[in-house]
Length: 215
Image 1 (cartoon, rainbow, N blue to C red):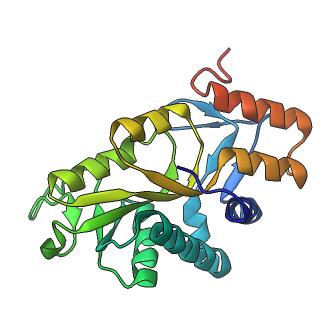
Image 2 (tube, rainbow, N blue to C red; image 1 turned 120 degrees about the vertical axis):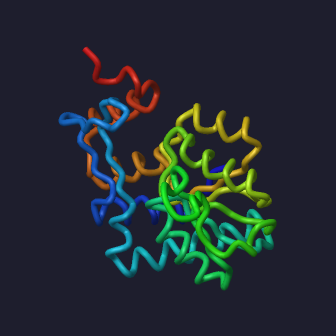
Image 3 (spheres, rainbow, N blue to C red; image 1 turned 30 degrees about the horizontal axis):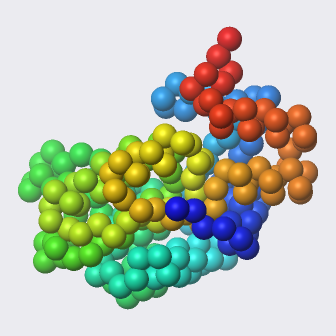
């Protein structure tokens, strides 16, 4: 599930203004997956901008209350979801935990970090970004396996890939985001961050990202 309206436009504006999102259709980035991409999103940059950080914290908190109702805990996904999740937990006055990508290799070997007494609570997971959703849903499953009731997931931004929507549906995990790829591209074109030709390239990438830019 995606948020719509004023919030998605405002978040898109912020992400472009502070260069948390960079658009380079003619000089694409290479993701860790090997995909060529005309867009790079690093929402960690929002943490360095108090106005943006505050807006995101407040809007995520509001969206969680509206979509998921009463919850007992907030869980951040390592690593970029940890600070965002902690900010949301503070805003809502809730306990906070976080989920590692894999169990710790020493000590207690934890995958979920925080007070063990949180187990069993109704939790919302916080991510900074949704691409395919695989890493997010790995965290969701870890929480479920540990006995938490996962109400859903909230993130700042999604690329809007069909595979992500399918993955979340199959995992029976509702999700919300503050902004999305379509809102971003619309804003970028309207405010001349990109040309009409660039927009066509950006939309073609989203339609088939794994093959885009491959000669």
